[in-house]
Structures are given as C-alpha cells and as structure tokens.
Image (tube, rainbow, N blue to C red; front, side, top):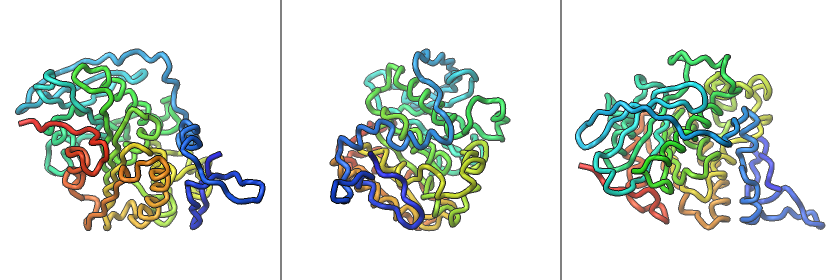
Length: 341
C-alpha cells in the first residue's frame, strides 16, 4: 500500500508506506511496491475526470499542409484525437529522413497569440522552433481554452485537464507512428499551463521519457496561500470546486505525488524565485519528498530543479538548454540530438 497524501503542514515521507509491521513501525516502500501501483498518482488524478478508454484506437488520420523554413519543415496538422479535429503545428528538420530523431511534445500555455511556442516576439518562449532547429521533431498541440470557442459543456470530459491528457497521449501516438521519429526517445516540455500539462501527461504516459516544466507548478497549499479557485475553470479541474469545496486538504492528490510519479524518468523544473503564480517555496518543499522516490529507484540525478531570479517571463530555453541538448545532467543522455543548420 502506498502512502496517502499528507495533510497541510504534514507531508510525510513518500518513501514510507501506509502499512505498519506488528510493532506499529511504518515500513519503507520498496521499488516493487512503487512499481506495482501501476498508475501511481494517476489513480488519484482520475478523480478529477475519467481518461477515456484508449483500447483499439485507430492510427491518427493526419492531414498535412507543409512549408519549409530555413532547414525546417513547418507542418500544420489536423487529426481527430477521438471525435473532433484540431490544428496542431509541427516542426521537423528537413534532413530527418537520414536518421531517426528524438521527438518533443511542446505543450502550450494558450493559443498562439498571447503565449507562443513558435517564433515570435518572445524568443525565449519559442521552444518548439528552437528545439526543431536543434534537431528534434516537435509537435505543438493547441490547448482547449475559451478563446478558441471550445464547448466544454457538450464535451464528454468532466475535466479540461483530462481532455488535455488524452489529446496529448494521442499526439504521442502520432509521433511514434512517424518514420522519422525514434519512438523510444520522446519528451514533453511546457511553460505555465503547458508546464503542468507536460507533467500530467507524463504521469499517465510512460512513453514520455523526459518532462520539462517551466513556471508550471507548486503544491496546492502554496498556490495563493491555498486558494485553489484558479484551478477550477472548465479548462482545468472544476471538481476541485464542486466536489472538493476548494479545500486543498480534500483534494486526493497533490504535486508531491505528481512529481514522484514521474520517477525514474527525467524531470526538470524551472521554478523562478519571483513567480507570483506558482510559489517557489512550495516547489522547494516538494522536490526533496519526490527525490526520496527517485533515490529509491536509483535515479536521484534524474530529478533537477533550477530557481532563476526572475518572474514568469523567465528564459525557458536558456534554463532548459542543458536538459534536452546535452547528456548532462541526465545520467542516460535521454533525447540528445544533433543541431540543424
């Protein structure tokens, strides 16, 4: 039995099981205990919405409109994750037919406009373009938000977060089907909304080997002092309000468990000191607890935290450059690629 989520201010060790021996002593979690839990935190995460059945899904029917930019192919892709279509820009090196390349799921904050992940006014946010230039095949799925006139009420999903997880997993299906992609080297990266969406899909999809989150998370008790109303819109998790009454103590999961559930895969968090949204003090409390699980699984160096002295306009690509482009600091050099042009 894995540990239940601690209450505010308690946050017990994640590496101590909920069961006791006959003397009443709490027993340490063993690697097989953690692995045998299957979905780990995904079981609790499902309480804010059900992930639709992925059995017998067809190969995504992809329609491509291609244009070349420098030494990159810029593709506008339409495919239906389940029922409805949506545009998903993708970038890939023109010479990718020469060898299979690692791929990146670039989770966006909002629609291309306020926060772009392609080339634009904020070059440090152009992580999709920059990673493609470095030699990755990149997919940048759109995010279901009201500004895109997405009808949440008529959708089958209780949670916009769960819809995002399902859509992102379908993007991984598509990436793995592409002949130019190495299916064993796929990562996810994102900023703010995209940052925690990268984490959430990482919890549910073990095919994602590296997860990078910029300004994307803090435990619920540290989110505006425990006022989690900002998490309850349609595009997030409305059940936090309707079922759990805006009480962080009642929510069945927290980011302590989310980060631990990514182990033993590589996770890099860029959490600025002056992020007014996701308080870095909470991040600093959660990382040591999650590191217990990384240590348990023999991958303590795969968990990385950077705390730049800036706000949410932090230079995402500067912070993550050593993460995706060079083998260090990751022990196995996941997703290392060759720069283009």
